[in-house]
Length: 134
Image (cartoon, rainbow, N blue to C red; front, side, top):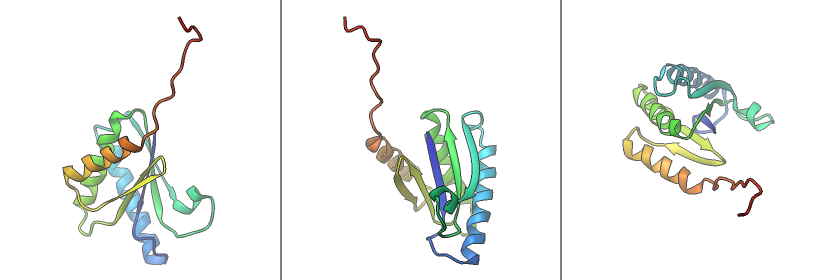
């Protein structure tokens, strides 16, 4: 399962680009040090424009590939905790399967709301059979 985290309000410019890059590096370090995610997540950073496949704003993103859905709650909790630790918390947008949410605070209620929304929009798992209808 893949989750992308981006920062800022989408405005372009050198300052926005620098803040996005700093936030991406800081969050990626935070996530790599998170015990609940260790061994369950692969974390990387890249320019958001690279991920979109075209030139655009300079916002950086943190890409997290989770080994299982159980780690998703740990990821959202860690992102909220990281945001809450910042002197000037940046706007943080989290995307999974095309559904984007913006973290507005670091409360447990917001984490639960995000998880409920993503679970409600998740596609059902494909049904597989062994070919034997008996």
